[in-house]
Image (cartoon, rainbow, N blue to C red; front, side, top):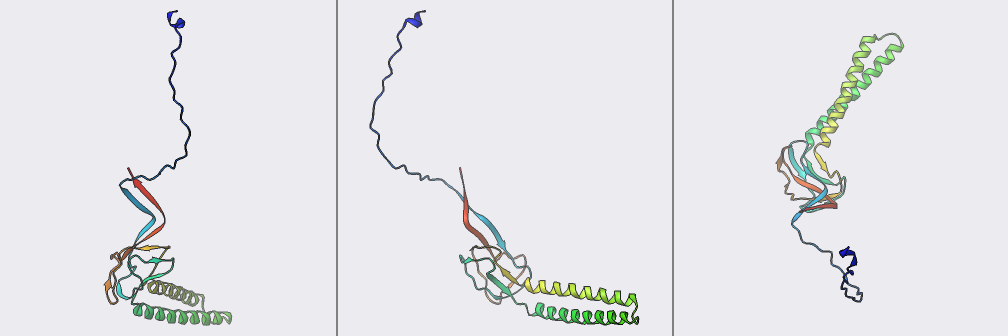
Length: 174
């Protein structure tokens, strides 16, 4: 009852006029900037560098040539595979025409068809070997340190450079 009879105490307040100010939203922190995508560039085949038209820090677009290895042997193998393919295709065609006249057996046609399929696969393999001697940018980005000279021999384990997509980045900091 004593508490209810006491008058509430007054709270002091001060009044200020509103003013307009700009707040700075700059913060300092130690952290790491991470690119959207980052990959190590390595050759898919071993060989001697034929061309390397880019430099460290260069911006490259998807599909731009980064380097090309000597592909003379791979191109010769592709030409050989194409010739074998054409020969197998013509032989299969001849056997199919002979079958129409009942002169060719089913076993001979199946053998020719299998040879044709092997030749077709050999052409695809040879084409892939030629393509593996060219490294093109898989996406737009910026190259890291890049130091390849014409005539230099590199292995598939050699990291040639990095490619980073800096169109968007993440910042990690405490």
